[in-house]
Length: 112
Image 1 (cartoon, rainbow, N blue to C red):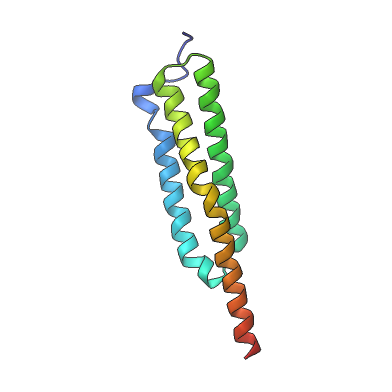
Image 2 (image 1 turned 120 degrees about the vertical axis):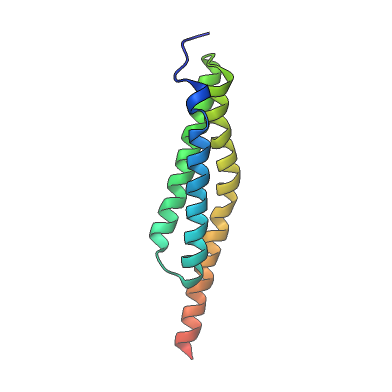
């Protein structure tokens, strides 16, 4: 086994916690702004940044597993990445749909 990258007992909880907080913030912003059609670039940019971070966490977790890092390190990095991809990935179409519905609603109101 190689030298641990960090102390898993002290720091392994941080990636999952930060990802959860970021997901809660994204959900709040989508709930407030998407139905109104506002700040699409900001919300979609944040969404794709979260997907990128989740992918990086998953890859880092797999690399840690292959390098023989302790359980707390590869699990603490890989599991939040996998879970984030499984949650945020399918939500992409839902967020896009909400913005499309808002644009359609705006155009229907303008036509009246």
